[in-house]
Image 1 (tube, one colour):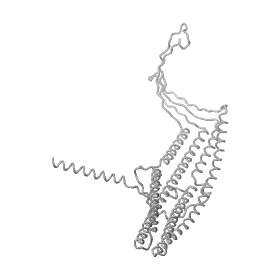
Image 2 (tube, rainbow, N blue to C red; image 1 turned 135 degrees about the vertical axis):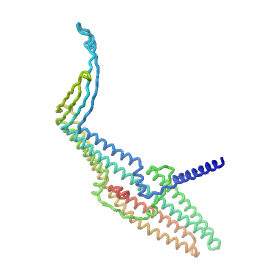
Image 3 (cartoon, rainbow, N blue to C red; image 1 turned 90 degrees about the horizontal axis):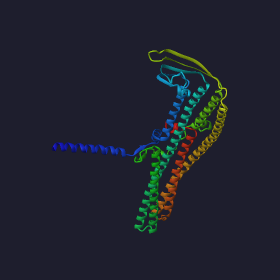
Image 4 (cartoon, rainbow, N blue to C red; image 1 turned 180 degrees about the vertical axis):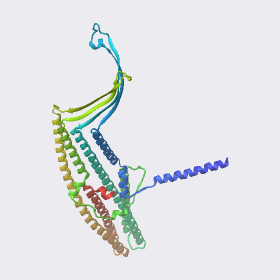
Length: 442
């Protein structure tokens, strides 16, 4: 009994250790680079999944339209027994006629088929379904581009928040050092109490700024988790924090013609125009004759034992003579749809042109802002160093130090904002010319 208890206790401890390790693994932060976040979003985001399902659905619509042009065949087997009431059939009894006839047995077993030989409307529907697949694929690409843009923007916003936290922490450390310096100088009678008080006020202000920056980082990461469709309990770590301070050049053709050719929204709209033109052709060509072949082969008889092989083969020609204005109405409706899509295409071209030009201008401006902001940070650090040395030497009070701290804080904020604007402008330009996935996900 003692050995059994020891074994059970050992097994329980092993299970607790394993379960604890699994829980620790599940609760570990998910470390993601920007590329990892995009890959995860393209797999897990519900909007992307819906777009993929729309593509699959349009492919099935194409298969349905194609099946209408292929031979159709079926198997039929039936046997029925009928008995008629003649009095009920004629409404009254007739002299010399029995009240009922039957029962009659009828048996049939065989196959039937139909083959459309010439029907242009079916061909137009097949072509429209083919363009429908391409339109769904282009729309799916548009959804993927939009999701990538959202993920990139949210990730860049998180990097900005993380950089603000580091800058705020650095300012807190500096303020703490300056406060310690002021307190030490006051202790040795070099400075006054007002200097220490000013340094302490500045320290508390910087601590408050750090709290705000940390809260902004948390909320930004929550938004990123929502885009990635992650478990709300799972935390995220940014693997590209150091790359926030990089300013990579934009790799792509910055032209309107490139945008018109590659924007998936434009491609989807062009496919919709083709569908509308094919629908117009199908409506006008429905006036043409339709030629088909159908028939069947079966055993037919009064019973299974008396059945003999029978067959029926026939060719049909269907010529519409009067449709009550349906064909004209369908043609007119297709014309109106084409005109509406042409207006949408013109509006989309203008929108794309504005987005491309705006993104190019913002990218160039942000590049210059980064250069100016980097120089500003360098000069602000030098100002803090010189003001601190003057205060240490007793040449001036710490008002100059506080002012230099404020200037450094503004310079750091300007640098972070400029870097964020540059990277966001780069993403906006990639989206404007339809190269988000090529630039960020490949």
